[in-house]
Length: 290
Image 1 (cartoon, helix red, strand yellow):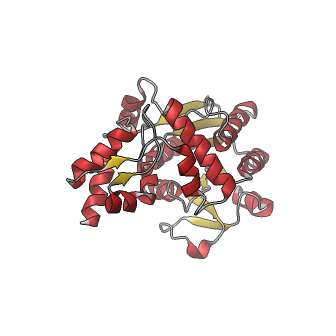
Image 2: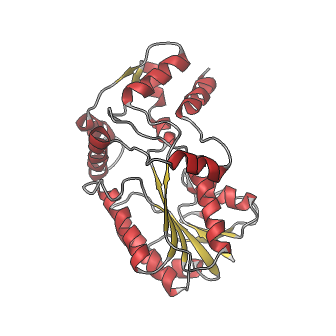
């Protein structure tokens, strides 16, 4: 039976598709613009999005399992609600949902609250689901690497408590493993929640020190300034989203993104290898930068 992947062209989704294809799964993707998407041979493509009900219904035809990833948008919750309702109408009971770590605690941050709402919906509607809760994406750092390399400042206000940053490739591999487990198992498997974290929980000062060590020159932490983060973000995203990013940064500073005991060993066992590290990412960036 076919696995439907939403968000298939994003940082996580494209890796999920690759991982599923490598494992021989039948994969279908739903994407707004198939002409701009490049997928492995054999992947079926349906044009549309999560608000296009005709396309959504067509995408679910013959599907056994759903990977639900919807981006941070003003109508994110509507997208999730519609997709899960259409999935249930189509008889799809197996879902792997990409939520976020501490979705039940960062209740004032809109996209965290949305994802916690979708988690509750999965439970109340009787889905057989794996809920994946990733921490901060290491891959976010591509947005600020030029600031670090060019100015010697690490600008993200990630705070003093620490974030267990996780690589998108690790997220995707766990998602693929769970999608295949769900698709091959009975649709009565209980809901399971998995925190997706990296091997290290790093503060702002820790991250700046890693950059300095790898680059061999001083790098300083820009400090805990969520308001400044909002100002900078408003230069390249809508004001509502920049404010939401500020709210999230305030929770980084006050709470951090801290793994539960056993999260790292559980993921290491599931993947059969060590988790990708933040230092490894910085070394890759430094090598490319020369």
